[in-house]
Amino acid sequence: MTTSIAHLGPPGTYTEAATLAYMNHLAIEKGSNSLCPYPNIAQTVYSLAQGKADLAVVPVENSIEGSVAITLDLLWKLDQLQIQQSLILPIRHTLISRSSTLETITIVYSHPQALAQCQQWLERFLPGVKLVPTNSTTEALHYLDEDHTAAAIASERAAQLYELPILASALNDYPDNCTRFLVLGKQPSTGGSHTSLAFSTPANVPGALVKPLQVFAERGINMSRIESRPTKRLLGEYLFFIDIEADASQAAVKTALEELASYTEILKIFGSYNVLSV
Amino acid sequence: MTTSIAHLGPPGTYTEAATLAYMNHLAIEKGSNSLCPYPNIAQTVYSLAQGKADLAVVPVENSIEGSVAITLDLLWKLDQLQIQQSLILPIRHTLISRSSTLETITIVYSHPQALAQCQQWLERFLPGVKLVPTNSTTEALHYLDEDHTAAAIASERAAQLYELPILASALNDYPDNCTRFLVLGKQPSTGGSHTSLAFSTPANVPGALVKPLQVFAERGINMSRIESRPTKRLLGEYLFFIDIEADASQAAVKTALEELASYTEILKIFGSYNVLSV
Figure 1 (cartoon, rainbow over the protein chains, first blue to last red):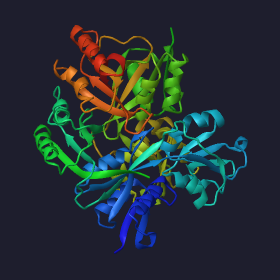
Figure 2 (figure 1 turned 180 degrees about the vertical axis):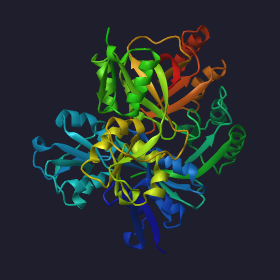
Figure 3 (figure 1 turned 90 degrees about the vertical axis):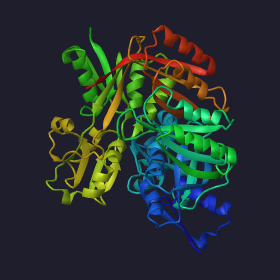
Figure 4 (figure 1 turned 135 degrees about the horizontal axis):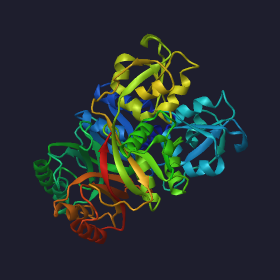
């Protein structure tokens, strides 16, 4: 049976690299699956929601730039999406160009997150060049053939894939640059080391967030992440996304989640899954 | 005395509109001040930190798209910045183009946040057009003269300022679209309705965030916002940004902040200020 895996594309993105590592981990042969690259995160996730793909791989968090807001917003908005796996991929940016020297570079294209992650390198080695945002790191490569004073920031793998020369390596301002990706599916997801959930609180009362957090703290359940997102109704109204280091199928965690439901307005559980460093 | 106010530019941005409303509120005459537009948020804030400007106005939060991460990161990174005022501005996007009809539009330029805020409108009225991110809504206007099949998303005021025709109005997917801006300065900021602070926690232990939040909950101090940002050291390590509805110069709030310091690793207070809807 062929599994169709949607991912943020085009080919050569870090998300594609994470997807290939995931397939390798599951010992899925490349031929028996179909990889479907989409031009943005929304289209990638909708392809799963609408049944065009069996799984969708999208970035959720970078260690330098933080959350990928659209991924959290889609998890909340689209029901029935479950996290099957979390993947952590090290990010190593390279400068790709048809130019043979930094001196002639006048413009650098890349995804805004990649530009932000190399800000200090750019200020030091390419001060005053024009920085132009693109929809993905791979899209940035499209500008290099027509303009030899242009450069793009993308992965080493992208340079190889599109047969483009690397002008400089190790551009990251922070060496421990990692991105975490989610493999989303519609199968119920149980029996993993981490559980993700999100909720809205009944009102903006003092301590509205304290009780939900106490539910876990009292049971010694570690919360590895909390992120707020606007409800999009009113400025100052938020949803809270929480990751706990626990399996929702365990009795104690089930009880905690039942208690949590009594303190929240809407509570959504996105499943229990394992984290894989690739 | 002339006050020099740096803001995210170029002229015509929503940030400039917020800056002008702030000057109007303070009954500062336009002539007695110098407005200094900068091409991005980092340069705007650095101009204040380096003493080139007396105040800096930057966006911090949008009701639809959430936090402006770079603003929070700079507040944490650069010491001595204090919030003098918070400004809330309604956002009303318009489609600006030299074309007289939607049918001939093939490409739309704007800031990624504006493109995201009009996603449903774009899918409905301009399906399949190319969406190109720019550094600001005003920068998007630069492409319209050379290409009559191009459109930009920016404010009505920007269209008037650059004498460009409005092709469609009320593009926002959500009607209650507001952006909150901060007026930053170096003067100690006291005596306002809201206080902003940020902290790192000693370790990723269960409940590391519960105690800091309890400090406020126990005293009936409402927390109007909590936002996490990566420490940029390791994936999974966070800073927490909190806004409370209280004045840090009041005795009870001072005691709360002293107690808070005992539960945090590094604690930074960004001042107490008032919120103005403009």
